[in-house]
Amino acid sequence: MQNRGDPNLSETKIPARKVAVKKTPKKRASSSITARLFKLLGELFADLFAAPKSALKNLARRAPKIAAETARRAAAALKTFTKTRAPRAAAWLQSALSHARARLAVPLRNTALAPAVYAAVALFFAGATYYAWAVHRPLPGLEAGPMTIARGDTLGRIAARLESREIIGETFTLKLHGRLSRLDKRIQAGEYEFPPGTSLRQFLRRIASGRGRVNLRIAIIEGWTFARMRAHLRAASDLRQDTADMSARDIMALLGHPDLHPEGRFAPDTYHYAAGASDLAIYRAAFALQRERLEAIWRGRSGDLSFRERAQALILASIIEKESPHAGEQRRISGVFHNRLRKGMRLQADPTVIYGVGEAFDGDITRKHLRTDTPYNTYTRRGLPPTPVSLPGESSLRAAVQPQKTDAYYFVAKGGGRHHFSATLKQHNRAVRKYARKSG
Image (cartoon, rainbow, N blue to C red; front, side, top):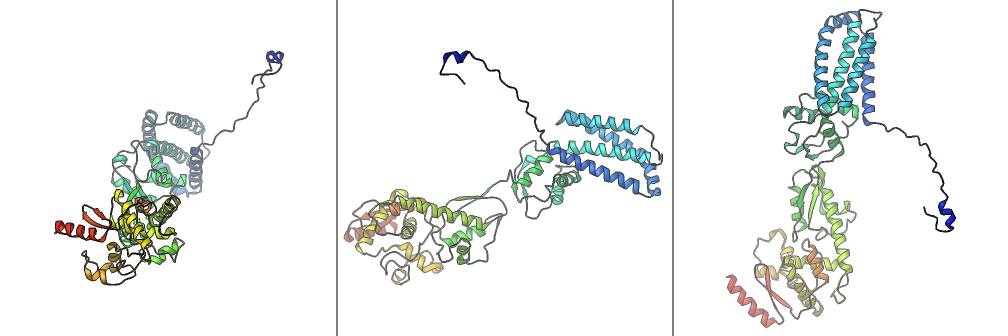
């Protein structure tokens, strides 16, 4: 800090005080595992000293062979371990072995137990060395492709699968590490990808935390009906079908709106989910997104609309969506519909008639369909239908509340999803005959 007042003060030097800060040593995650390993060793010694004399004599006869084999494995593991991942841990294990050997050189009172204790200690340190090496070494072939962890999979099943794929040589180490780290009960279902060099320890942490899960995708398309959306979700891979036996009203009740018709209330978009996720999560996300979109677009509405409710905007948007997928035409179609609504004319929109026919519609709209009255037939009824007739996308929502100013009151399809617009009925009938001949 500089002195900006008296210039004499600028030459005064105040010696800095050194404050000794006592640093709290960070606890290492491995310390708890080490403590548990020593606890297991203590339990092993307790078992040895409590064992019958006959069993100890049998162990004593086998001790030299056990000790020799474990010492050989320990040496090999230490050699590999030192060259690869953790030379400091290897050095710690080596000094611990030397320390144990020096301490055990003192003759034991019960000479019959000496070989058993030597074997137990050698076995423990060999096992600890192998364990440390096994959980840190890169697992070969794990990065070859995604691995699916199903709901209810135990660590034992997962270990068996890895063993069958020759990624691990035995299942015990993974199961032991799961128990010691207490991650064996936290496994999360999903499809996982693992980067090259992933160790057993990293593998277990990933499947316990859910990191590295491959997100699956499902697309809901503009213009679909709610019924088609439901069928699509039922056919989705690895999506848990929690709503399969529910009615549409039941689903809306779970979303907090039991009296709201579901049509048009779900946003067409691509949704990501983890394997084993509930289909209800997709419904929730799509419902929330459509409500968010409608609110935002309604705030930017034009001031001369033919209606006052945002629910009416959703209905009109669903009709526009079915009339044309082209964003460039949607605002003009919206202008035509607003013109007709202001004049009190029937909308005469084919998509509303088709929606009213329902599952009986075979793909060919007829004069009989146009004359048959339903709540959705805009040839027989004025105004908007009672509910949306599709799931409108963002562009049709915007078109519904920002119509293009036009003198047209009619339009007819001319192919390729495009339309011809007319201001008078006479012009419209001429266009209908023209494009009917072309399509015929």
